[in-house]
Image (cartoon, rainbow, N blue to C red):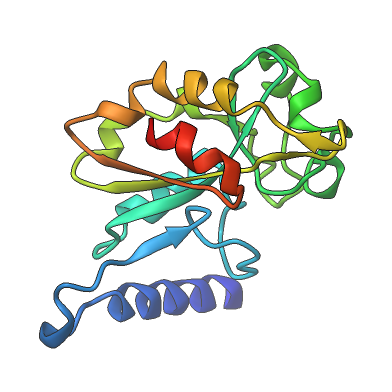
Length: 183
């Protein structure tokens, strides 16, 4: 019973702290990795579908940032770390596996959420929101930079780059990817 009281108090604190002061009405609030990367008080694992839905349901949340990696078959998946063993029940890297294999991967968290493909994210929940896609350019298992064209094709095929119902921004830490992304 004590846990339930603490959880409800925490939720009330979070919801009340999301209220914007009138002098800061132009300030935008985004969920980092949906509900918070390495946020130990989060109910769901970062970048999971559950974390995304929770973050976007909070009053005052203007959008989310998600960590994006490309799979062997060109599908786009949400995951932060370089290797799967650090946070899931699987080893290897996203880039080594295809959609069928990645669809069976679960986080090693309290709820054992499934790994989420960007294609599984219902864009209706993004209506009037902003989404930042942080492209993870390094393939740790390949020990090389991933192919930017695969990222662009994967994201563009889902309609994220020209949606009229939400805004998409791309984050990259790879300087050679800026021109192809702008083009």
